[in-house]
Length: 399
Image: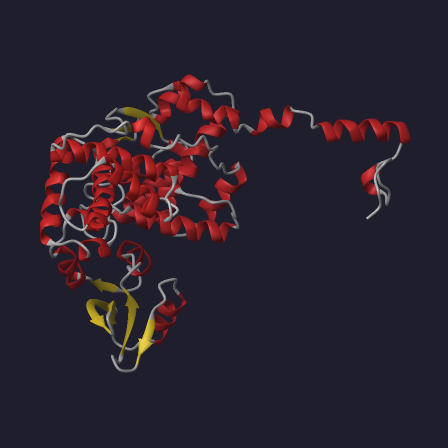
């Protein structure tokens, strides 16, 4: 079997990954035709890809059936060193001095002691790290310093309302950690939470999205997120022991808010799931990463979902959470009681689930548009269709 060895290196001040393999026309064509922007360099006498944005999980999924991939050198490089905050952006760790790194690592451990989820740990540490960088050194700060940071950094960067609110929450914990004599009035500093309606896919769009996704691992991810209403973090943390295939149930352990719940597996998913388990033979996690027994990455899922949306011709902004929103909305449209939907989604408060009552297409379609009513009345009087003839409503000017 053909083999590709991945080697990290710095070339012309850029981190790249060399792809070493014996010359093969078909393999070169497949690499060049992929979405990884793989290029040839005469000086290196090799194919390479820019490291920034390169997703090893996706690359493995796309080429593992064609070649033997040796990524051991890449893994060694990734295991070197890193402050916990660097998982968001490598550029952050390069802007921190040793004192700041030590402070933020201690803050990370402080949050971990509070038993926050891994996602919250990374988000809060990352947001505080940006503030610490702006302060230039570890020193006492005031509420006004936080406001200045928001005014001069956070707002100009077009950070979302959600990120702004997360930053204020993170700073509350950071103040507790540093034992500074400050009190944050969250409502005074944080903007009001946005009340945005979720994007929802139609039934046809969901089916097409699954149909165009040819990779078996990617297809089972999309199918399960939608048909079981999973959060992306719940999907990647699913272990084989969480499945009761006889009862067609999945146990979601310590979901958001540290709540357990059961969710159903759709009948039509069962053959796909059995096929996946037989083909990939995962050991611990249902969806495993490149290394056996390790979870898949959320970034990999976002990337292949974006690709599948393009293939399916879906032009809406779609994230993994859109599939969950669509599942809930379709349940409601099919007559499922809102209380059951709340339980299936793992919502603590019914108000959270009630948002789906605002996006039910069936309810919206029952409303008679006043323009339709007005035109219908005129057409009944004139006994002809106004919009099928070259005429305008009485009292309007021709263009």
